[in-house]
Length: 298
Image (tube, helix red, strand yellow):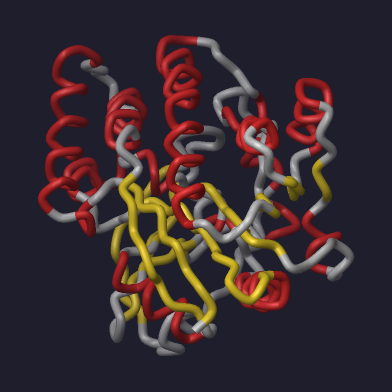
C-alpha cells in the first residue's frame, strides 16, 4: 500500500505549482493520513499522495463501503437504503425531463439498484463496475451483468448512448482523460453526460473540514467545485448545461462525518447541521453538498 500516485500537473489548468490544503485521515479503512493539495492557479483540489491505481483495492475493503457491500447494518446505512429509494425516483425524473432517449450506460454501477430502476422504467441499460462483489450482487439481485471498466476503456462496449451517468464515481477515476475521450466517442449526437460529484466548496465541507465524509481519502482523488469542473469539462470539449442539487446528501454527509468524531451527536444536532447545509444549497446551488452536472459535447 506504499507507492503513491504522482500528480505533477493540475488536471484542470496544467499548472505545476501547488500548496498544501488539508490533511485528511482515511476514516473508513486504514486511518492513514492523506494530503490534499490545491492548485495555485485555478484552486483545484486533489489528493496528492493516494496509492497508485494497482494498490487502491484494499482501501475499498470495508462493509461500510455500501455500494460494494450493500450493507444495511447500523442506523446510518439503514437510513441510506431508505433514502436511496427516494433518490432513484429523483434521478429518473431529472433524466426523463432531458428527453434525450433511453439508451443508458452507468459507469460505476455498484450493486445495480440504479440500473434496475431505469430498466424497469423502459431504458436499455449497460453497467460498468470494477468491484467483483458488486458485480455479483447486481447479477444475483437483478439479473444484470455489469462489465469490467477495462472492457469500456478498450472500446469493446456499444456506443451511441443517449445517457452516460457516473453517480459519485468520477472522483475515483485515475484515467480521467481516457474516460472523457470515451464519453465523447460513446455519446449519441444529442446525448448527455451526467456527473454527480461532491462539492468541496459546500457549506458542510467548510464546517467539517478533515472530518467531511465526502473527502473520502484516498478513494476520492479529485475534489471538484462547480468552477473547477466547468474548466475541466471545457478543456475536454464538454459544457455544463444544467446543475441539480442532491437534496439528501447534506444529511447523509452530516451523519457520517459526525460519526467519525469521538463524541458522536446523532440527534438532533447532526440533522440540524444537515438542514443548515441543505438551506445553504437552496440559497446558492453552487454551495450544495453534492451536485448533479449535466454536460453535452461543446
